[in-house]
Amino acid sequence: MSLSDPIADGLTKIRNAYRAGHKQVVLNHNNITESVIKTLSDENFINSYEIISRPSNNGKLISINLRYTNTGKPTIRGLTRVSTPGRRVYVKADKLPRVFNNIGCAIISTNRGVMVDRKAREDKIGGEYICKVW
Image 1 (cartoon, rainbow, N blue to C red):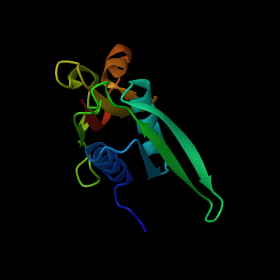
Image 2: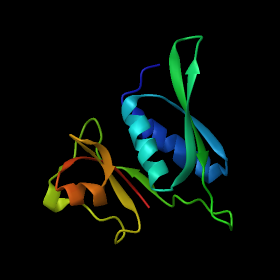
Image 3: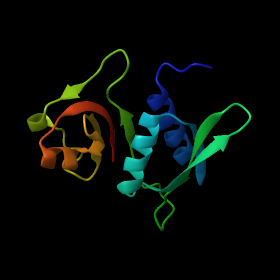
């Protein structure tokens, strides 16, 4: 099955897994989704992730261990896709968004890779505004 927006599909699977109280979720693999998941892991929104090979059809999966607080609440309160295939959103370095006064983070795809808004602001580079997480 072909997906028109694999990033939105992955974010929706993560959002639904948190709402259902799951400890783990499995996503389809592609390079941009892997970069977004790595960024979420670096920002401590998820515990860990692992790339799983599927020898039957030469594909890969990403297995994510979700993170919860000590009281059992999800660490991700909101996860929203901003740039879509039908409407790309690009931001300049001086117009990078701040998500909930830097409580959350905006994930930006730049020419130096996928990074959070704080890192992009330090490096003074803009790019495509993929999603925001808080």
